[in-house]
Length: 407
Image 1 (tube, rainbow, N blue to C red):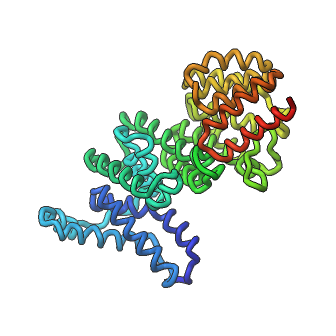
Image 2 (cartoon, rainbow, N blue to C red; image 1 turned 90 degrees about the vertical axis):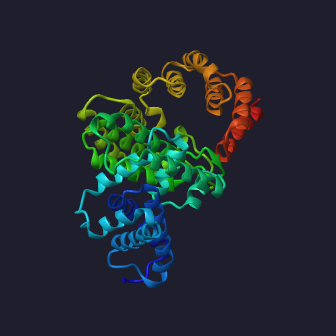
Image 3 (tube, one colour; image 1 turned 180 degrees about the vertical axis):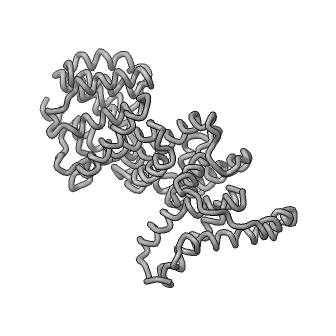
């Protein structure tokens, strides 16, 4: 054993090792659900022992050995599996393989198309991210039992699919990759801008999404949309230090102290985006990353090239149309061509987003720009009543109160 680590160091070490350990156990035993349980049990043992006894020389090897013993015990307890146990007992350990490929294979298993997005997110965070059920439940503000049932159902779906461990065949990979990237982006968004609760952000989720997307890019360097998603995450997360003030209150983009933005992360995001665009056809994640880059290039809010951003949103709406894209395009139009242009575009999308706090917040902002204080006040109040995020609710309420005071 090495020196005794602090508990936080153990948690980081376990989270980083989780996908490698699970990949090794699944590759050997073939049963995803039981292997995931065995790995979780091994990680619990490590969390209890390592802070007092010290970390082993090979933490990953220790975890694989403990999880494998758990799996062997389960196999021995099941007489129907004795033949399989005998085969495993004489089968040589598989040789080393690319960790990125193994981790990506796990992500593909956790993001099966039969799973709901919520289930795929939860299973990915548990099996690949190394988060406990309690941690995932806390991040999404649901009871631990509820999250446990969700994860159990997801594992059952994966088990029923009986998919061999490894990356999907090339003809299936493209479609499955869309689901994987969607799940990773959902994890990032929930971490960057929490949809519920008192916290503005949950950095453990956004950080995990970035880590997993880095792995996906390492394993699939020729898939431009993987690079596009990583660039989008980096260019967006770079602004996180300025998104809240000292009291934790939301600071909108145009009021942020841009000197707090992470310049190194912006530079990396720009490089990744350039490589992704050069690699092939431009897709929605690359376009969203280009929009984020346009914001990040502006040293001041008033220097933002809104004409470029409006054009990029037009391209994005062509390849990935949707009400949220149209909503953001309306904001860009207002900033580029005046609030009336934005309000005209907003009128087209309002029926699809009626009752969504973001639509009412955007309408309030555009009405305020147009000089309609009373209308903006009513929309801010409406938006504040619809959001489940307490920081957003406080921000929108303050905007409404400021207009009421001015009137």
